[in-house]
Length: 452
Image (tube, rainbow, N blue to C red; front, side, top):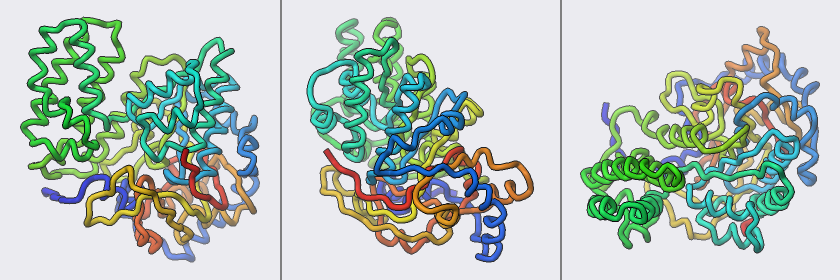
């Protein structure tokens, strides 16, 4: 059955929160049954929960958490929203712990390749203030926070004495115009004639006009025929750059430029979303996972992204599989997912409605209050012990009680860039979350992120 939508992807995802990413057919269990299932595992959760103080985020890292993540090649560390503070500084503390313990040598960020290169150059020894550099970078606005800036400053200091410096890679694909232009410039330096042959076919995505468009507007400015022609030209561009194996950055730019078109190819001026919408929306996550696995990096790494991207699985019956699920499928237990849950939160978000285009990324962000707990994992975690803590739910015994809990559906409303106030009505779909993460960090209260 064809699915037609006049609503942009960002508005759709923002309107429904992260829960729509995992749309499934699970019905809510009645309160009595849920309480019985949770009650059987609650003593184990209480006994195995590790308290920490969000005001001292380094208190989160411990030998016990190191053991829970031991043996992983890639560790996905999520965040409960894209606009809250305590979970962001806590995930930065986990990354510092992984780096100092010698586990992590690469940081894969949910941002485009250009922004990744800018931040990598900074931590390799560039001078200047970390907050100023992040503020002027091409990173998504939601990541321009003190939490990430302070981590960048720490990584630069670490790299000054490190035998194996930490690297940063941007693994998203929402910068087609800039990535394509950079790859074409690189080819022109090596083979001007080949670049001249490809330039007319790439004009709709490398022109000055294209460079000034936000990514969703760029896609909307193209017809399906133009997009497909540009994709074909990018394939030829990448092949031409293959004759120069030393220029991996340019080949990667050509790759991510192509990925951006492929991931959003049904949202052109004359396009429509048809077929399996879940599989279509999963394209971007699949590309992020591929970029992590194929990055020119050595040793284990950390995947910094939203909960909805690092989650290690999706709902039964759905074709949507987040990047973390793709990594779990490829790496098995060598991929671990750490997600954040909370009791109450105020966070920065762009308010969005499902019937209007998303606001400009430059628009002021609004604090949205989010305190509902009904049917959420927080409802059980809040009973385990007071305050904030983490627990390795992957270690929950594989007995009858453990299996029943892993099948228990929860409402996982994980707002990101955008959110709607009606989300507090708790209308998000429910899915069994037992296979989605290995470690959950519960923070009793979140406050808004601190923009730089």
